[in-house]
Figure 1 (tube, rainbow, N blue to C red):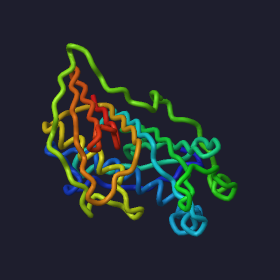
Figure 2 (cartoon, rainbow, N blue to C red):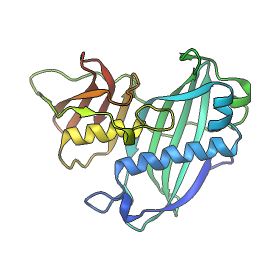
Figure 3 (cartoon, one colour):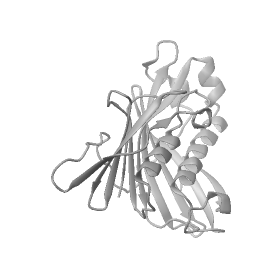
Figure 4 (tube, one colour):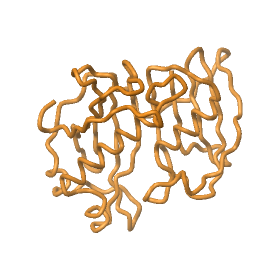
Length: 241
């Protein structure tokens, strides 16, 4: 990739593998999240500068295409770069490559810049936008950000076990980390599912001791999980298939 991309080398460890000795989905997302943090820190617009300016990036959406998940011991390259800013929105691609340059995973994300005093969206200031070199959008599918809940006679619907948000689900912003919602969804599905695509639509933040009520929708080989509050309003909707 060009100079616009941030990359780091990694090796798939046992502690990050699933039952098939492949990199787990949540470990993949953690690696992507780390890459974006590393790039921002190195560019001088990481966590501390944002806090000093009372700013915060909030993740709205994941779309991940899995071409081939690497296995135990494989050496890989984790990469990311932003490809656009528009007002308070930011757009960023991620990828996982083999050492030979083969794309293994591609991902797209959208983010909102928030003023932490008002907890309202705010335009990304120039010092943040100018800290990055924009890259071209990855060649992948770009679906609508909003995930619709399926319906119809072929859709099976069931309630899964209620979850309580605990301290280990939170990140440094004191709300549930985006990867933890995906963990909640995979636990609600409650079976090993080999899938090639994931989408995650984040709608509102859950905090310590909030209750999450998962509802699982199964249509063919696709699962959609609504992670709801007590009133049935989603914190997040996750789709895998």
